[in-house]
Length: 173
Figure 1: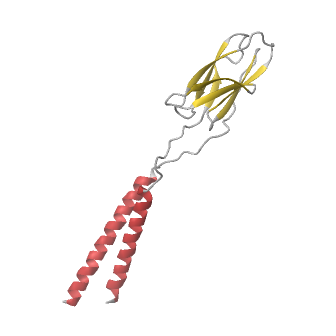
Figure 2: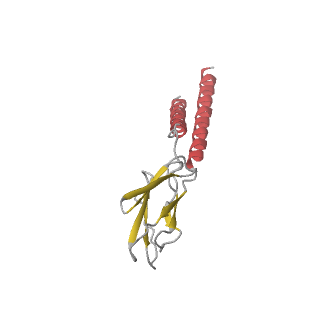
Figure 3: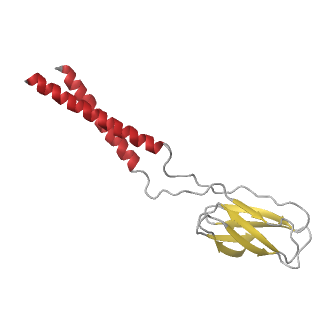
């Protein structure tokens, strides 16, 4: 008589655990965002001449977001990223300019802030790492496995419960 009670308790616990696991997995974060990977900021010419237009190219920024471009701390313009988080901003180097002058171009969307240096002579540009990368959120590959495990545990609990009840009815008869 004791064995049916233990199996009924086990079955009930398995069902509760399965329901809890399924609820936890299925009630994941609403509207999880897929943040872009590594952001980059580059220029088409790291050693421009006075009056030349330099293309400032950004990738990996937030999609469809306004990006503010500054040079030496002064805002030189804004541009909206495309649906992939990319943009090309035309920056016109001042004329006249000082030979060998280094300028730091900064682009920010409020989340990612990147800089690239240009030198008005023969040096190379450097791209610095972003100052604000957000973690990737949303579901992972384990979500499907957890759902499958939850369904399996619920099914096993149901089978054990039915078997326990059949044993009881057989024992009572």
